[in-house]
Length: 198
Image (cartoon, rainbow, N blue to C red; front, top):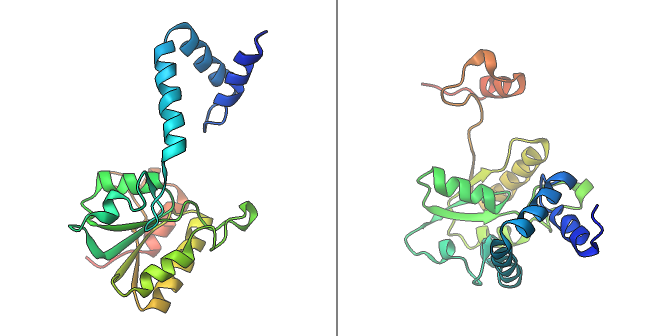
């Protein structure tokens, strides 16, 4: 590390970002100090403002500056369709890649008792209350196909069943344009087991 305590603190602070180790943090710190102090100031201002003003929507739990996010407040969206995702990044991916016009519920994680994430931390009480309102007709479960994601999906389907709501799951399997010989065994087995009529 450098002889400057403040520089060392900056490098260490940058390591909080995912995928940023000691060397990458050091390169970032030196870059902004050597070449882009203006960019560093803008980044610091926007980061401070975001941390202070962005919270979670009370309706869907995604990131929002308002009590209810713009998607939840949009009357043109279909309130009968509710898609449950693990993170705001997953929500953004669906918004950008599909024509989905329903609403979302963001878990902000997945069931993981070892990490202290249970039903309460995922906001399942809030989701159950939303399902009990009677407006949702289909709960689309879009959790990731991991062990924790599958356990979460199972719990979500039970929650939907208790509320009399149809639960569906995103399809998993062979990607479009993929060749069977290059697909991993787990994905291929899952796709084979979940085959559909054509």
